[in-house]
Length: 172
Image (tube, rainbow, N blue to C red; front, side, top):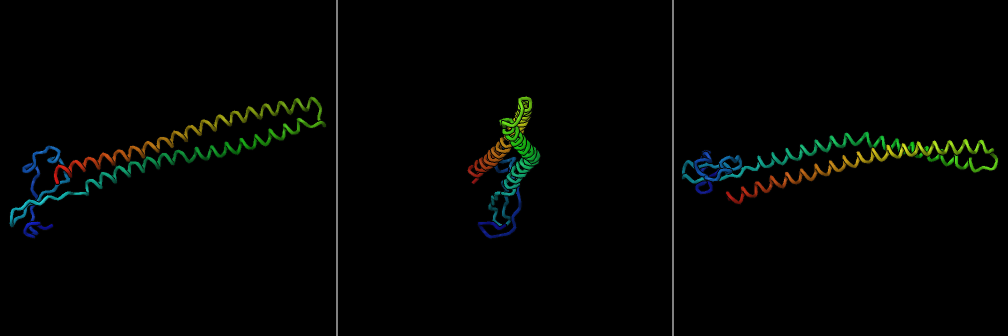
């Protein structure tokens, strides 16, 4: 660092409290003030590292939460796929039973037994469909949670940027 007035590299850091009246600036770690040992000129430096650290922390926190959601969602998607396969299998069984029940080569007793089987298969399909809905609801909730995390991250980043914009307007 050099003094912008005389070019000297002998700058000494000084305390904010002695120079600035604004309370939030006194507490800030962003503004670094140095005095030139040769000419006494004050140099103000804006430290972006703190802002970047806050932004990285916000992004990392959101990323961790999204990874956790993804981890929760994976087994649900697998269950949903298994349920879909089971439903398709029941659907095929039901079609086969219904086709067989319309055959003219069966007795009334066989037809009644096939209708009973068809009813049982429909009940199983109804149960599987309910399981599908339950898992689909959980997946949608996790997706909404992910969207909310993204929104919260963006809002937090905006808040940090606005905080620093105010700081920059006041100081520079």
